Image 1 (tube, one colour):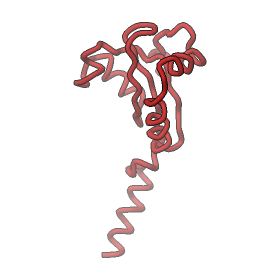
Image 2 (image 1 turned 135 degrees about the horizontal axis):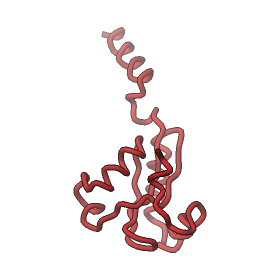
Image 3 (image 1 turned 120 degrees about the horizontal axis):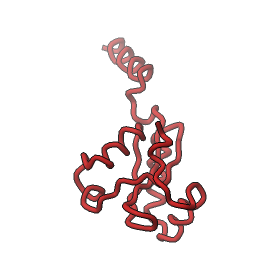
Length: 115
């Protein structure tokens, strides 16, 4: 049994199936400059933003039409991106706007730059 568990663990690590071992992204999407904001985390930024743009994800982002990627950060481990998201969710709105302005002062959609 020990050998089986070790093989599964090594295989999971090798192929990146342990969530904490993958890289991650923190991102902001909006519906317009200085509009409604959503902060999220994903391990596949291009796919997730595509899902937002096409309205494939039910919930807050679909309800408010949040389709424009205006900010993102890359992390070597997804757990670091999750911690950053938790911190940012407690920030005042002005701090979030200021953070976006450091990367994207015009609040333009960054989606095409991912490709």
